[in-house]
Length: 617
Image (cartoon, rainbow, N blue to C red):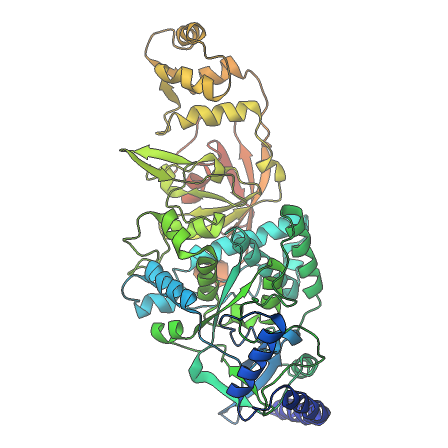
């Protein structure tokens, strides 16, 4: 009880000190605002005046765009303190470190007509005509890390693995790239949050859009006005003195902020030419009233008020309330997206963080392009009963394209051109459904750029990864030959019709003259059975060539469902894998994990290091 009283006392003292220190600053701010506009009777008129001044200075007419409460850098976390059996709600004001972002405070607007239209289309694409509340509730969670595994995301209920598993995969990719050999258990929580933001930015970059459209939540019913201005330094100090805060405060810059921005900037420069920012803060230049950074404090409305959105971290909304509260903010550069998420981390961690990011990916990609990728939009991407995500949703998160199939390129099925994966992906994908002959996963997904694979069962998505980079080393000629041969053997029989030999040789850029092909057919099919075996083909054209994949390596597995982990604690499980000689494999239907692994490595065996057998479900 004394500790709680001390905490409350420290909070009140901090607020009084902040108000005294800021009284002069607020007065000067109001005087500057009065000089900008004669019409300053209300926040609305002040917003209009500031907008007109900004537009005049730019010489252009600004078009409207919504800035969410967190885009303004102003949000609050509600901390519940129990004293004598009563709940006391403390609202801790947390301002962002971006003065220019906060300068737009008080100028909240609804999304533009274009964004509103696309958000309605996204809702229809994802949920169909009606959003079932029980399914929506299962998807309503933030990005939350495990208590025992700092970098492992927790999935609270079935359904959102279509987003959480790809995000986890990209987070692990960042660790493998940037921190090889690190002990995952030793990663600090703040660094994991930075890695999460970089993973999200990676997924957004895959959309290859000229503008990043971030969806935020701004429930109008929670909007209030507060007659004081809280700069970032005071908000950070208040957070330091408040040990009950359970999340990274929105707007309090962490020590890793500069590192994250520098890393993303370096990656951006390595992959594309600089295109320039829309403004100093990355807020879209078309936003009404956008101001440039230049003052030491945030710009407020004429009467000295600042719009503060009080969003409880465990806020519960109906599907209609959620969709009515969606706002957008646009950026031209991915580093500005990273900065926005760092300053508004609660937009990721609160109840609807996963949904907001999913909507951001769809809006950034654009519904027109998503519809073109999907082709058939008759069924919603989130199953209306079970809540699992469709393959198009998974593919969009993994590759930036919402195609419905996992094979390479296009396949002609009954005269229809069905599109699959068009290039090698950063993250791989393997599925138990392939062993059941429900689909065929192509080489682009099975052989990604990084040793990270999303694994699919019939009900759930998990992640497989390794620090062994040779698992994704460039193909040797023999591996290329094997892959091309198997592409003409879609049923996985390990043989092809002898009439297809010429096509195989031509695809491999080997001699394919009719006389040579006829000679090889007789040599590879001496009994004239009309088939050519894979082993005979490999022995003839690629004799004794060593494969690039090591014979032994370590694999690690992640499953975000607590109930699928030992003691209901989400963590990684490590195993030692060995590739046996030959192409023979044992089918063990009682072990779905091994069966799924064999779709990538047909002759694999694996021994897990502890007694708990990782689960695909």
